[in-house]
Image 1: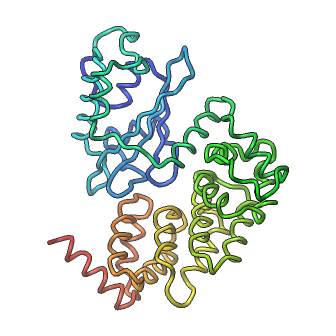
Image 2: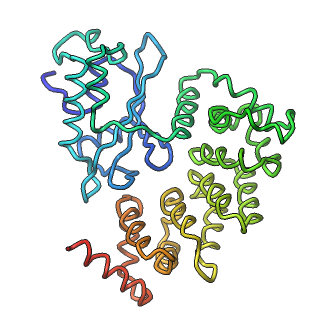
Image 3: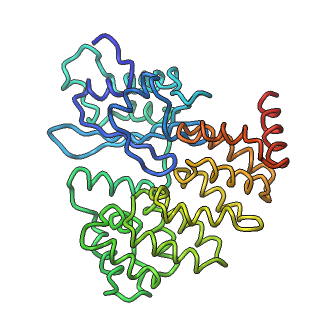
Length: 353
């Protein structure tokens, strides 16, 4: 092996076990086979966010199940393919910072060894490193523990006792986001999904909002989906709560009940809250894999209060491989409104400038 020309090879050379997750939108595992194709530019990056691939690399040595994390943000091009130059630069920084030897024995390239102060400085100055939001860190940590068959954090029991109703609904102050993330990652354990469905209406917003932030990464059972939808419909005067409840349904947005909810929102007369439009596009994009629904969404979007919102969301959606061809079909629809045709024209004029 004379060169390290992709991340998979770097991890393999170090004799590491590893997992790859997208964390730009919701936390989604990327198979090793797909990641290899992404690195070889044989397939577009499936979940781009604002022109980047936001990746969590989780790796560990066979002799130890203590995982290490790299958070890497790499640009993608207009075709949705990974920027090879940026990826190669990232690898070069890692190789230099850790003093890896391409032709050495594998045990000399243990990426999990504690770096020196100088190496640590080089790693921290890596321009492709980023720090995810705290709730995503907590959610990813819980997901990894489940995958590696490790116990949850010390916060799990208190959180479980709370959602069970044992502590009293007013005693939420000591609930940790990590505990909520553990509950979300273990919905089938201890009947957590049933407890959430049964008792969600008792939780104050201080619990519901962060809970929704970690539920968004999980495909939810029907009872919990319906409970979240019911809560959404009951709180139509609380925009902030509705945003979070809709986010909680993100990984489940291909479910017919969630699609029905989004369809109702889009087809409702009058404008739709800008923040809800953003949640649909950035979190629940899976629901938009339908020509008619996406067309209705674009029509709703073009009448948004924020004139720049159409361009921002359109550019975001067109970068998603699953949405891109459907979006092009919608653009060519002869029955599109004059407002939508004009907005699309203005968008492409700005892109050409």
